[in-house]
Image 1 (tube, rainbow, N blue to C red):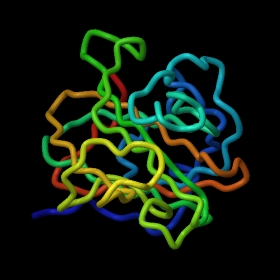
Image 2: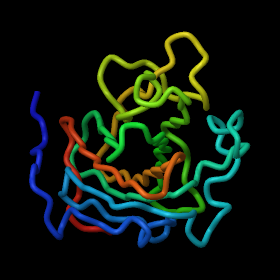
Image 3: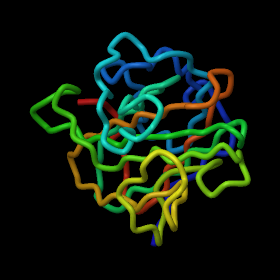
Length: 198
């Protein structure tokens, strides 16, 4: 199985001000940067309705609102495979959640559909299985995790997503805890991203 390159050093190409990408329509285009660091984000951007009533967030304090100190990331698929990624908070006590959406070939952000939904979190901080790094990884079976960490087997990870050539995705990443700290995201798997946005 081949793995995508890991870029260990940050550069202007993969360091982004998250607040410039606080809406789906202004999402950061990954291109072929499989490793990116985003600085702190504050607020929800201009469109506060684009991630409302998200199912896995319905039992949370914001009653379905998935955006809080949000960063949107977009990418297209060149070669198919299994999509995996790890979101690592700059502070492991921060609660990071995410929603992965697919955008249809003939549509835009208004037509996005949920592929994966992660809202797990815990007041116990980094000692909890529902805090710290999160994302999509092998051996996980869940497609969604509700807010909180009270169900048996709850953790901060979901099943990888099978992606196909030509598909487009947008990933919403929210820091539920703290607008001061950013995060790093690293994509791995046997797929490849499209370099340029269509």
